[in-house]
Image 1 (cartoon, rainbow, N blue to C red):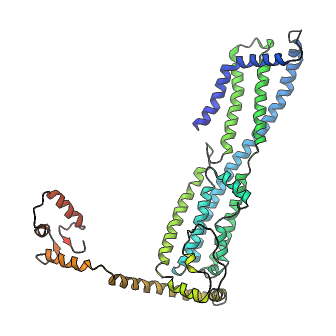
Image 2 (image 1 turned 90 degrees about the vertical axis):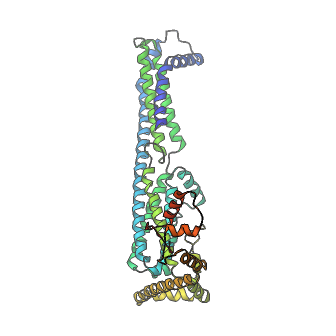
Image 3 (image 1 turned 60 degrees about the vertical axis):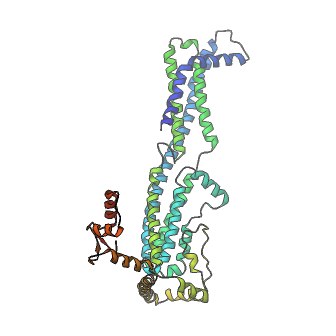
Length: 436
């Protein structure tokens, strides 16, 4: 904003200071290259040419400049408003789509599918963030030339909902709702990308600059005439500074509006909410992966390897960077599963799946707890034995006195010893338990 203020205020100040030199210099330049020399003291120019310039030429140029500037400012300002509106709409629809994903894959059985769907959404939000910051227009132009401007991560999510994942969703109503939301989001993105890529050509700005310079030159030519001698230098300087100030201020305004990601009218505050959505989706993905890990995929992968179908290990990496769609070649298991789910007994199959998934998670937690018990470190037995040796009164606690006797040497700094003892004594009871 400070740079724009300087750019708008400095040209009028320079115009006020240098008006006389510019006016006389331009007049001498015209006289030097003129083909005829006036013999009537420029009386013909004063009586005919000057009124023609001020009464016909100047109004025509001024009207053309005003029309172009008004159209440019109106279009650019409306583009800023539309971009803010579309970003807010996309953010709202993404939040609703997140709820729809939880409606489809909110149970334990679909934790892996939920993680993959949320990963697609997180990838789209990251793409939306990159398209809402400086350099986005250049990036979109490169994508347009390569033919990939319409590609986004929601394509993968939409494709997955047409197959087994969509058929196995817990709530089929959420699948249709998710399709509608994806359709709306993609439509909003198309409008937003079209607005970003719809810029004025260089000839448009060159024409505006040329018209503004022409008005300043005409004023310099007209103001350096004997008929204007009744005006003092301060008045002429002020009028020339006012004209230059209007041109410079208009130019700064157009320059500010032409870049939607910087300046006073920047849309960056509207896109700040996208970072919060990305963090929320990342946290949801971590929770879904943690929930999916409660049931080991080893048995499922074994069955898939025997009966055919897509490899489950590929789907367990929702953050893979390739962007390629999972294999669409389904084997016997996936084909049968799809037809069963889309048949009349689909609700029963889903209910059985949910129950089995919950039971498998409980069983796996018990198995993992038993494994951890068998794999507990051997030093624990030695620790318990040593603790019992220090505990002279066999009350299950080690006091400061018992610990000092065990050390069997003088402590140089009791303050450090007390601090160490307090750090070990988590509950502040004044004695150390074996768990501590």
